[in-house]
Amino acid sequence: MARAADAGDVVASAIVRDAAADLAETVLAAAGRIRPDGGPLPLAVTGGLTGLGPALTAPLTDAISGAGSPVRIMSPLGDPLDGARLLALDRATPHARLVVRARRTSPHTPPPTPATPPART
Picture 1 (cartoon, rainbow, N blue to C red):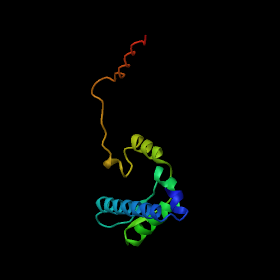
Picture 2: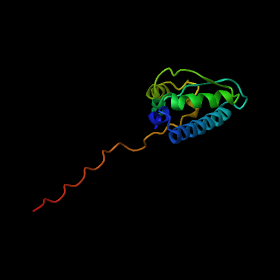
Picture 3: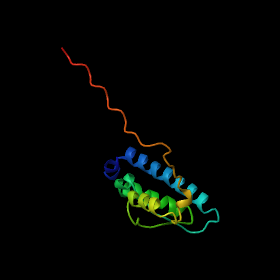
Picture 4: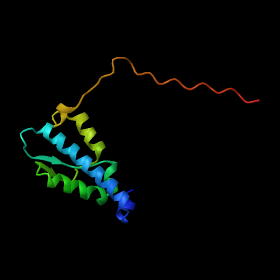
């Protein structure tokens, strides 16, 4: 889709721009919930969607920047697994209060192995 948008496909470009606008709306809504006082909030975009490149990130950045929001876009310090690891190991991170931690109450049992299908004759 991103390649088609980059190549000038009007429909692909519209789909990617709409996706960027929806993502920007979600980011701004979350920022308002995290920092209702409007204080500055750093934002780094990571994950699979960033692989779409400028076809997505340019309109996303424009939408966030043009909204006059307190969100400050910055480069990520790692990938999503780095963030998950940090949250798992350090409960003093600023976002730790937003993490729901679950604990297993029973011992882990492996899933059952599938039954062997009947032999064909």
